Length: 286
Ligand code: HBI
Ligand code: FE
Image 1 (tube, helix red, strand yellow):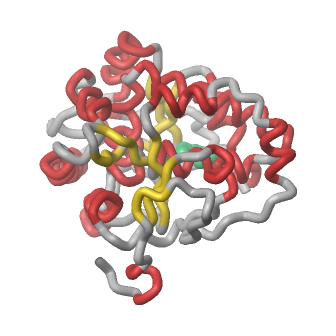
Image 2: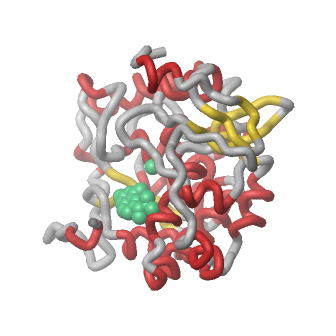
């Protein structure tokens, strides 16, 4: 899919473009502020401590769309990562190469007022508010880089589908065990007002202890909230299970095993909450 993406002429060889921060309008900055204010109150006791610390230490605040250069200066001092602007989705190999070199690619456009709750392509609020705070955590920062290196390797094994599921169920939709309860660390959840509540509080979805091979086999939904969330014990544990992991034997084993449906629970799962799946099965939107 990604190989069919065409690089716009204004983008550099690595697909980066200038953010053009001075070009944002007041109303675009106000959309950031609105989204920020809405998330922050709700995330105070729902987001992982590392995410909230990251917001603080990067001075991500309700003060308009961040300037990537200033943000990168602060982030680089903490963990050696930078944030670079791209026109939209970039090819997989480009994406992985940036991650492997501690560059996080972010969209520079912001959603329109009528899309506050849902949009298909990641905008600057999802990419920066959702993803960047955790890049200030040294362990998570290493995990993202390891993921990029793993991605470059997976391309050779034609196992991108499996690896993409790992990204989806950790970086985008992951939950973490913290302070005796569950907290959010996935950017797809953290940047969504309604899924932040749903992921932690709704009886509908499954919440299952993280297992690398289980996650790599699990299909996911892109059209609605997730039907299963996977819970890590700590970022250390996640990094340990995946770090510079040579996934070749894992991929070989998984090739002989069937995929798992998004809502399935099996006997081998460490089930934390078995979902009613009411949202999916009855169409009830709660
Ligand atoms: N491009 N801009 C952008 N953002 C992504 O998250 C992204 C991408 N290209 C490919 C890609 N993600 C996938 O390879 C990963 O989700 C696995
Ligand atoms: Fe994302």
